[in-house]
Length: 136
Image (cartoon, rainbow, N blue to C red):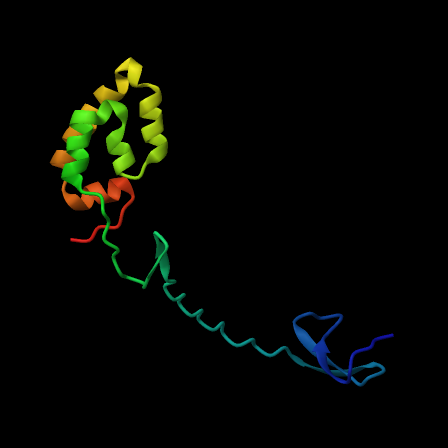
């Protein structure tokens, strides 16, 4: 038993054609299957508003940050062994790691190199390296 309503349906024997179902039986009437319409283009997704530090940020806007490259460099050069520059750059986990290994003097050596790098970088590159939005 076939529960399909009367009409054109895919031919059970020739999948490329359609056959007329009269509600009880397949008839001898066949036709070529209609060509499906071309796919519609998908709309481009709209830019979603971003959140930065709990503040609404419209698409394309740049949120200024409160981390100064020169201050971070000076903290790295003078107090880098304690990881103060990492705390200043809002990288608390790394700051704690520097504090844990301060007795080895390795953090002081790394901070010296970071301080020099901070001084020779431009503001945009520094902000990108720290994961901050750059606002000129």
